[in-house]
Length: 254
Image (tube, rainbow, N blue to C red; front, side):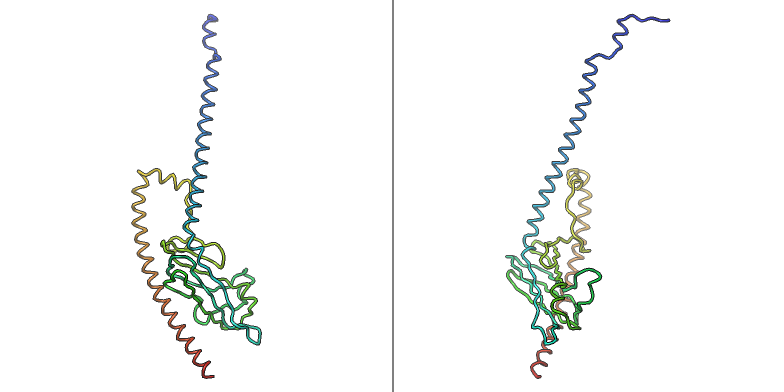
């Protein structure tokens, strides 16, 4: 049996300083990881606050576009045959490509019995609305509509482009929703990973150049689509004007 001197055995055993260094290293790793987590959370909170401030600034004009539903005089039978949607631009800047739609809200079980079927089209289009301008759109119904049901279930949906070129959607008095792209879906806000992607500019810059080129093509396609919509809207407005003029002439003769 081989025996070792006590000095050799003592040298191989871990010392108190070794334990202290090991625990110090573990504590350092833990503190560093905790600092990274806290920094990430603070960055995420700051990004959310900045995004909220930007969204509030962007939606400032969209919140100043209001609509209301008005009813004409109720007939002797207690029903109405048309309704009027009044829109006003309370902002100091114009809006463009305005689309107004009167729809029937409520649940799937409630939808369909009110009778909001316009004789021509549920859509109304106006290419330009100046600051402070108020417009009225008349909707005629194929059937007699109960005024109470109309005020409860009637919903006014509008879409438009503000002075900054941002597209918006709004339902009645609810908050406006930013639209993004040609599919009309709400725009997704910036996330922590999207902000981190911006900081990785050596990689994100070339990818961003390709994305900007793609967005340019989409923008040109959207402008062409808006031009077609303006033409269709003008045609519908002219047709409705002729229709109501003919109705007024017949009413005057009778």
